[in-house]
Image (cartoon, rainbow, N blue to C red; front, side, top):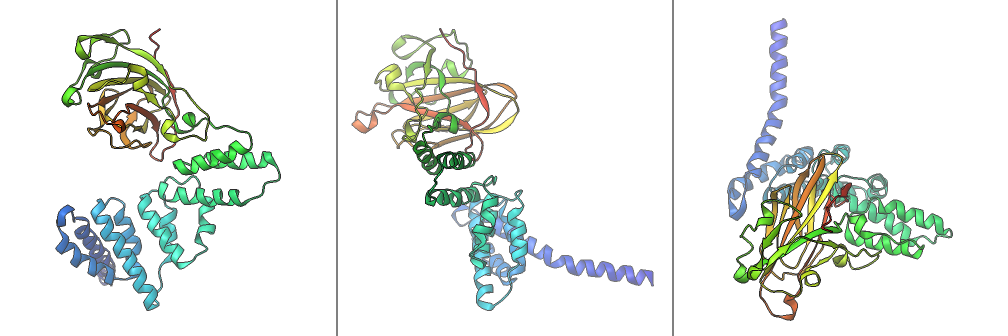
Amino acid sequence: MYRMFACAFVWILFVGAAPAQEVASLLLRIKAVGREGVGNVDAARAWKELVAKGPGVMPDILTGMDDANPVAVNWLRGAVEAIHDRAVKGGRAIPADKLEAFLKDTRHAGRSRRLAYECLVRLDPKTPERLLPKMLDDPGSELRRDAVAVKLNYGLRTAFTDGEAQRQYFQDLLRYARDNDQVNTITKELKKTGLDVDLTAQFGFVTRWLLVGPFDNVKGVGFNNAYPPEKAFDVKSVFVGKDGDQVKWKDYTVVTKAGPIDLKKVGLVDLNDAFGKLKGAVVYGYAAIESRLERPVELRAGSNNAVRMYLNGKEIYFREEYHHGFDMDQHVGKGVLKAGRNEILIKVCQNEQTESWAQLWSFQLRVCDALGGAAPVTNVTPKVN
């Protein structure tokens, strides 16, 4: 009797596990899709089978999105949306409780959780007012922005009778805002209460630098030429620069301005001002920062010029393109700060174009987390004089 019961139990487990294994297999086939049509035929077959399984597999598909490549994410997103549409038309129940549990599990990728949220909103239009107020500090930018937007819009519509209450409201909201447009709007509201926000500190811009140059970049020779500042740092070093001239490190401190102002001007290092309007030239910017803890960070730079970025001697980003426009955070390098002292080096190359729109030679750089919040670091850049 015991043996019969055990065999029956194993058979039940096998039957229950088979659908899950089948779903996992279908997800793997879809996630194998690549660029330029690689794997499309098999992915299409798997996609149809997966969608046919109905609403019960929606959480599995969302989980599959967590580590999928960008092409596969589009396939999986389409599967969730197709299942949702068919279920609504056919009157089939969608597992809202499981979708909400998935949304609240912050271990999942932001894009996956965002899709779960969108499904819940389609099921119940009151979802934003029910969930977003609790998501101001969400680790995913995909949801955090909406949460901030709800509170920001409420504050903009509110006729505050108490100036102190208005100031406190927007100061609290500023702690959570990460997107440039939202921060600027909040800054403008705080300005009305008499409070100026230091946007350089708010965004984590580096304001104290050592600069050295110019080095040669005629015909673009400098971008791939590792000049001595890339190999080692010594504040007392003297180098042979462009045209054989001797060059050495010099201090540069960014002029900070209270907001709201054009974010392209926050933390700006103007190399035309520091070195003159040179062409075919390379300049390096060096900064030392101290972190209390080891932490992952992003170095986000804005520059109209070709750039390379290094963190503690390791290159973490490069882009050799000139006069492509200037935007805050357009160049992003990812790395890890050590506990203690860390060194940042940025290489900024100017080419030889003479058009009026090709004269900009500048950069801004900030140290932040993956959401864009300023990293808690201290600038310990040495001074030459």
